[in-house]
Length: 155
Image 1 (cartoon, helix red, strand yellow):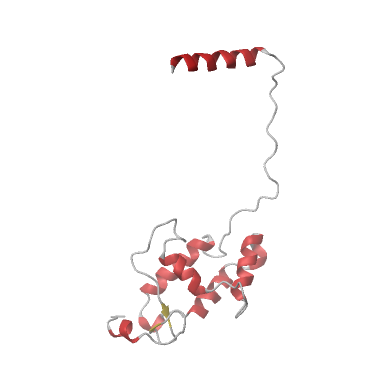
Image 2 (cartoon, rainbow, N blue to C red):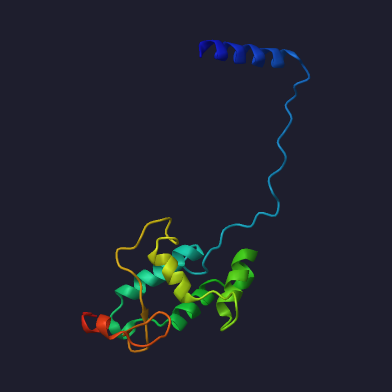
């Protein structure tokens, strides 16, 4: 092991003695870099904003629970497309479309939140669920009231 290190050191000295080594500057950084997504009033990135919305919605009393449409409206309001990087503009455009292939849904973001993908792998203590206008828990896909869950809820 020591022999290999000695050979490496000798090679490094030989290269340094070759001459012609100049202090060549590194190329400039990318000029097309766009800063991260930032919310208009919260200052949060879009993933943290989704997380905050789901966490806050779970903590609200039953009469104040937000529907998926209300959450979507708040996200679009917090992140006006013209002030965002291109990747976020594309995402927000897909969030606004309804019934189109390749759209982004609030439910898909909720699933990512519940799996910890929006929070760097930190799974939330309380999973987020979908609510209707009356604050009742509904099925994430069909939107029908989920009776088993609402019977035992205290909110």
